[in-house]
Amino acid sequence: MSRPILKLTNVNKSFGPIDVLHDICLEVHAGKVLCLLGDNGAGKSTLIKTLAGVHKPTSGTIEMDGQPVEFTGPRDAASRGIATVHQFGGTFPLMTIGRSFFVGVEPTIGWGPFKIYDRKRANAVAVKAVRDFGITRIDDGDRLVGGLSGGERQSLAIARAVHFGAKVLILDEPTAALGVKQATHVLRIVNEAKKRGLAVVFITHQVMHAMAVGDQFAVLIRGAVAADFAKGERTREEITDLMAGGETMADLEAQIDAAAV
Image 1 (tube, rainbow, N blue to C red):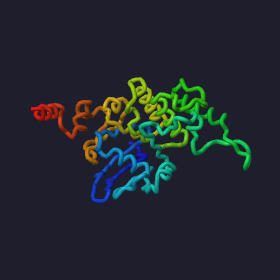
Image 2 (tube, rainbow, N blue to C red):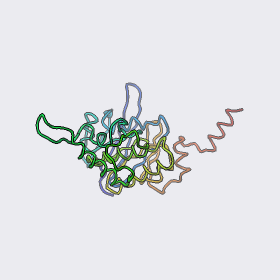
Image 3 (tube, rainbow, N blue to C red):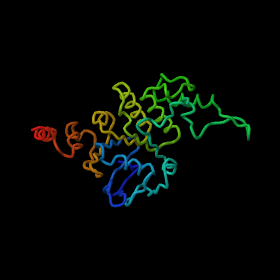
Image 4 (cartoon, rainbow, N blue to C red):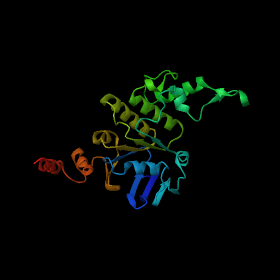
């Protein structure tokens, strides 16, 4: 296999006396989806923030393209090609699609003090970028983002990250709180990003969604990687059991029955 775009080796993160991440070792490759699975409190959020430059590791190394990196903040991580799309897309409901797509880097026309926002260009680029991902329902950059479905807002955020040169796409629970149709739409976008050669970290607690797009899987339990395996090496039931801390569903049902007595 080729050299990973992103590699974590023995990454630890502590907040004072509290150890949150324990010796995390992961690799993310171009054109592949790494699914990071774990229940609430497993450490997924802390790991995401560490990759995105919000937190600095207490120890361990992060490498990009084989070179050790230390992020001074989210902007630094973004400049290296790491884009994080959070659960609700990171878009702005009261902005137009074009404005939301270019927020912070708006194209302009004119010269010097006479520069103004180039609405026509922004709308055209945003609509094309989104439609290139197969989102044909979006055809007007002046539409408000708040009028889009949850899946379309996720897709807009992903298309924006790709347009601005992301190499590693971190998707934080992108299908959470979405209906079946919208979730399927987002999964299709994830597969399209993979086809374009991006390395994708797909964080979820929904095993079926992970299995639909994943190439590699890592199960996080209490801040440690409890299992790391390739597609086809574990069944849905085995993955679910791992996420439950190694307890089988029968074990859990027995505990519930005992508690009810």
